Length: 506
Image (cartoon, rainbow, N blue to C red; front, side, top):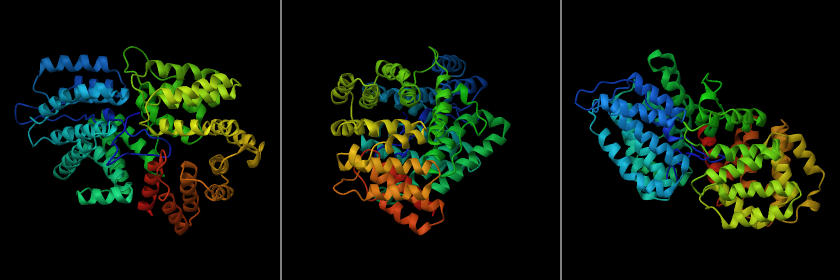
C-alpha cells in the first residue's frame, strides 16, 4: 500500500504489516487563507468538495472541479496542491516505477507554483513540507535513498518552521505529529543519525500532537471537513505505534464512503481478530469507474477469504494479478494461491503457483521476500492451515489443528519447529492466556540451529508486551531489547520499531 516515509529514514513499519500512512490523505488541507501577493491559497467551497472527492478516491470528479476553479482563479495555488496530491496518490497506489520516473518533473512544477505563495501564508510551508514528504517517500520506495534523505530533511524543516511560526494553525500538527512519532520509534543507529541532523521527536509527543490536532479540528465548525484526513492519520498511526488504538469508526467518521478509511478500519478489525467485520467492510467498499483503483484491497480481501470462505479467495487474488500495474505483492499472491490449492488437495496446482513465486513479480516488499523464503523451505500443510485459521481469528480451530500433530511428527526442520511454538504462543496470547503464551514463546526462542527469523523476533516482542501488561516493567524492557537483537529477516524493521516505540514510552 502507501508508505509515509521510506527506507533510510523513516519507514513506519509494523508487525501488523507494512503499509504506512497514505500521502494523499496526509496532504489535504482544508482551511481558507487569502495571501497578500498575487499567489493565494484559498479553499473555496468547490475546492473543499474536490478535497472530499480525493479522500474518497473519486479523482475524475476532483480533477474536473480543479480545472474549473483554475479558470476562475488561476492564482489560487490550492489547485497545484490538489493536483500534486492526486498524482502522488496514484503513484503510491500503483507503485509503478516507470510512471514515477516520468512524473517527477510534473511534481516539481507543482512545487514551484506553491513556492510563489507569500512567506506569511501558513499554507506555503505546509504544502511544501507535505509534498517533500511525498517525494522522499517515493524516492525511498524506489531505492533513491540520497534524494529521499535530502527531501525528508527539507520536509522536516518546513513543517517545524510552520509549527513554530503558526502554533494555532492546527493542520501542521498532523504531518509533523506523524514524523515525530516515526522518529521516536527509529532503531538506535538511525535515531542517532537523525539526532545529528537535528531531527527530534518521540512516540508520546507525536501521538499527543495528532490527538490534540484532531480534537481542535473537530471542535471548529469551519474546519470539520478536515476531519477525515486528520482522523485517518491519527487512527492509523495509533494502530502502528501506540497501545491506545483509535479506529476511524470510533471517531465517528463516515468510513463506508472512503476506501482509505475502510483500509484503516479493516487493519484494526483484523488485529482484533474481527475478520468477519473486516470482510464486511471490504465487501461493501465503494467501487466503479469514478474511483481510482485501489488494487491492494483485492489482495487484502483474498487473504481474509482464504480463511473465511476459501472458494471466493481465488477471484480476488486473480483480480489483483490482472489489474495491478506494478509487480509488488505478486509473489505473495502466488504464495496464498499455492496455500489455497495445497489445502484443497490439489498439489499439482499448488506446485504451479510455487513455480510462479520464483518466476514472477519483484522482491521489494517484505511480503514478497517472505514468500520466496517460505517457498524455498517448502510449505508445511499443518502450519499453513493453522496460520490461515489464525489470521482470521479462528484461534480455537487453529489450536486444534496444531494439537492434532505433535511437533516431532509435523516439523522436520528447526524453522518449522519454531513456527509451531510461536503460533501456539500467539494463539494463547490472543485467547487471553498470556502466561501460557510465555511458555510457548520461550520454546520458540530456545530452538537450536536457527538463524534470526520472524518467529523468534516476534516471540521476544510479544513476550515483552505480555510482561508490560502484567506490570513487569523490567522484564518487558529486557525482552524489548532482545527483540532488537533479531534482525535481517523480512519485517524485522517493524519488530524493531514497535520495540523502540514501547521503550520510548517506559
